[in-house]
Image (tube, rainbow over all chains, first blue to last red):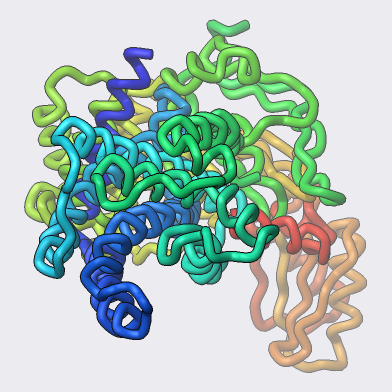
Length: 260
Length: 325
């Protein structure tokens, strides 16, 4: 385990140095939610029955979670890109921990996106979003958001190692964009017809979004929701635990097995 | 056994779907020697090296690298080897120095800065050390790659086509580096498509053909396998057949014709044939000679002769897969 920590730290350093030399993708993925906040918040917000500012308060946690879910796409893209690099062969022939390479990628992503969230939050504050609950609950909300991002990137790393295709990652980018549409990220699920509401509430994004709204004090937990949304914090933790238990071993095994 | 051989494999097999890329590889590389693995694209060279370097898991067979079992102790094998792949196995987004320090760190080298500095100096990369590797020339990348493989003084070094695509100057630099490693006692297994490279660097040459070893031996031994090559140029086309008859008698091999040059040549398996005798016999047969030569074979001749069938479609296929991987 200490070998994993040591090698993982070395790989984290590699990823951070790479990002510093080549910050394009990071800037793109982190400015996207800002423009979405402005479009959704003002264009859709003006058309909705609810007052615009109320909708924007509702929207900020949703966009935070939707952006975190985008970690599937960035994780996949980076892992797929890496499989075509000769340097992966070198890592595999070094006497180092097998999990260190994917772990380094995921932790680096976490560090970078945590920093990248700051500008989005500032814009959020500017358009009327506030932390309306306690500081401890807010800290819990951010921790939960990071955990969800961590989970999403592991899923992406596995898919990237599996498909080894940056193109497929690009196409999946479209799909990860759709995922939050069938969730409570942008809309309240209460208004959806029964079966659609159930589907949306079993979307992990709904559980995490509801947890964030609850912890930030932006909106209450909806009545009569499916279990993960009705108990959003426990539901989010359960979702992350299950997804990590499935995808971390898969990703590490796929990496260790190599391209053939 | 492990004290004599740095690499010892028995019946190694690797299949990619239908294609048997490596078929029963028995390889013995003596400690401190340089072995050149030679073969056309798709012969299985790269797959063989990737198996021995723990990058692929064999479907069958076993191997010991520096005394460690390839399948059961991959971690111990990895500690003992250095690998330079066909495609530069360094990170283009990092600088040369950052690459070497990262690999040194992963090798648990204590003073990573000092080790990186040493290797950058040794391979003439000190000036470019702090530039991203993506700005390096092909030769510089290969040198950095080789440097990265030497961080922990490996007992066995695998080089997969280390000079493919390099200009002559860079190629000579790599050759000098391999020579120096050999002098230090490092065991080297290298693959190459260049016969000149094998001839120059290798103590032992292994000819690979369609996934198996077709022949092996020292370069002189392999050349002795096919004897010398006799060629005569005659005054006019009418006498080429007569010249061929004489050559056939003397060499015991089927002559080949070059009609443009009025030349007839044949591989000679008889080591006692001399040039004066060749000329005397042709003269006695009334063949008007313009030129005659009897030259030792090149590894090219050996190669073409011992692997008669050219690479077939399916092996080309496997090469594509190797590259895709």
